[in-house]
Image (cartoon, rainbow, N blue to C red; front, top):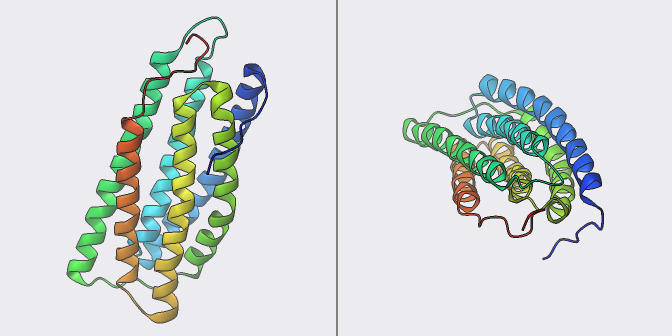
Length: 212
């Protein structure tokens, strides 16, 4: 399904993108702190992975903020955009490697996490907030002419998908006692992150920039 774009000029798009970045950073800092605290308390690798993804979401927003700082209306900043895009891709792989390893270890050792009501609440809220934020970012990308903006939107959309996966995992553990659902959800989170990293790294060079 195609996403409707905004008919605004570049300066307005840059201002709006910076505002969305601030919202992303504020929300995800809170989400990361709560998720990581709840994850370590419950021994939930999926919840820890979700918290790490929130942390990486903050780093992606900071990377894009740096990219937007390079914005010049009379100068091409394509190299900085590409560098920002690949930095975001690397963040996906770091998350995938860590969470995948921890999840497999928990499955092998049959390490059962405790139920986490906080995790269920965090996942539910994120499942509502993240799709709205991702859609707003994606609509701005064409006006910015920025593949990095698309990558950042993809990162936010991944957070929404991870929210659903997390909700299934922690929910099944809390309600049905299926301890293995938590590391299984974490493996799914790692797989989604790795796939998105490859897609982001292979993104084509900018074709619709201020200097194209």
